[in-house]
Length: 581
Image (cartoon, rainbow, N blue to C red):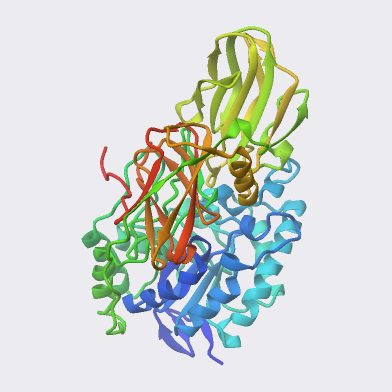
């Protein structure tokens, strides 16, 4: 069987120097029926390795579970990498950042105030150990010396930016080795002296994460990793998008020049991202460095392979650079072709307030969403008030739509620093709260969602709340729309569901045009495409071809604000928004 080790200056594959030329692709952000296509296109660009994170919270929504079906079939993903003649790098965290909800940590863990996250706290390590054992059951038999593709496994993730607990890192190493992982183990940190020192151990191989000034940053890395191969295991060739910001892009020529510098220096590299994919459903994270910034649905990342799997200018530039240092196949991917343009009447309706989708209970005080299972999508709160006045909360996480006796009063938006709103009179006060993304980086990691108390009206404590999550299981949503039995072509007043059908001659990628909509969520054939929001930057939602079928298909939209026209359109090209403001 092949061997993969670390030598004095290089990675060694069967004893010979080997330069890792890798690209990041997260299996959980790509429809599983498209994995093989994306992996094949990575090989056509000249990559020899695929890297992926593993999201603990997706695999283990409850403690003791480890889901591996459908889009979470890590074993199948790694096997497809192997079948393509490529190697693999696995980064199981347990914390992954990745602009992913709560950095990949599960809600049942973050909701426990007695647990100290990302530390040598025994309670935390017990939970982590269960998770890592499950991951390594998949990885162990797929290591290169077992005849599989896996050549590297990473310990934790950018830990030097968060903590300084060497015992914690050693505990992860011990659990990893005890689970039968024999390939080299790495860490990654930004090339700053403090981060590299705190985030690694001398017995692990330190790598760097950066997107520019490659020569300078490789030199910094070399001071902390005096022997063995230099590696940028996150070469940021683009960037992620946040709601309300421009679509981020990086000039292809600049990124290609940085890649050339690293490969010419003999360094190994993992391009982050080669193919970004999509934050389907309620999986996107958020950043909060004083201002809360939720991550958009598209994770295109301005990557070489676009969100819909088509090559970009960056793809061709990178391919030319890689060809100087490694063999590149003659075969090349096709350019994008126009997707079908389809207009749809959203003529079936159900107002959210008229459904039975709120799963609430009575609370004396104001509960945050962890009290009712920490639902990712939405929570709902209601209380009777006997007079008007100034309604105030300690914090709103993350955006509350406020109603009095069913009439809209306004919104309270965390991103704007808002905590108060004027209530005009007595009545039944209700709030539909959007949970826009769990903070994935820094000290607010895993924080609770919903309304954060105390809640007061003119300074007096409000008690006697009804609160719970909004059940958006697709069967419940379909039943609610059917029960409403309401058809209309009038504009949609949110919050409401609007649904319609469309016909396709054959399955095809689609791009759902959302530019005329407010905010909400869309489903195609029961699959949650993710959030839409008029704040942008993105103006379309990507619909992978495997989600649709020849014949009749279904579109359901949850619109929180309103639709001037009760129609939807699939457009011919993706639109990820302006690159400047």
